Length: 173
Image (cartoon, rainbow, N blue to C red; front, side, top):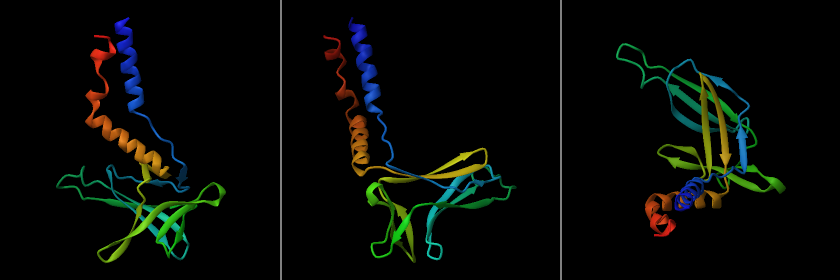
């Protein structure tokens, strides 16, 4: 009986510590890219086209980690359109429209040295998926309160992992 309780408690602890959150908005680029370079994603940038009124993700792949002294380092940059993103120049805010036409922040502009760069907000992420040379880009926006709760849970599980589960109390000793 004690062994069963211990196994149950360990199972519950492992399932509750790793909860995942679902994005409230998913933006999948209709563009697909390919890279013949065997390498890594070395750079990712967001760029706004004033002319087209579109936001693009620029993904650079290079082979610098895998090339030798005799090989030439190669780079390829592929552009991916992120549909549905609008820009409010007055607030320097990139956003998407949610249900009931609500404004959901996606990215902001930040001043860096000589130019402005576009950075996702804290609760947004731009993912680059590479499969055998094929490249896809997916942006996800999460509820800010879900992100804060997950970060707090992760932080507390790292610092108090042994304090959360007192095995002696759990098995009745």
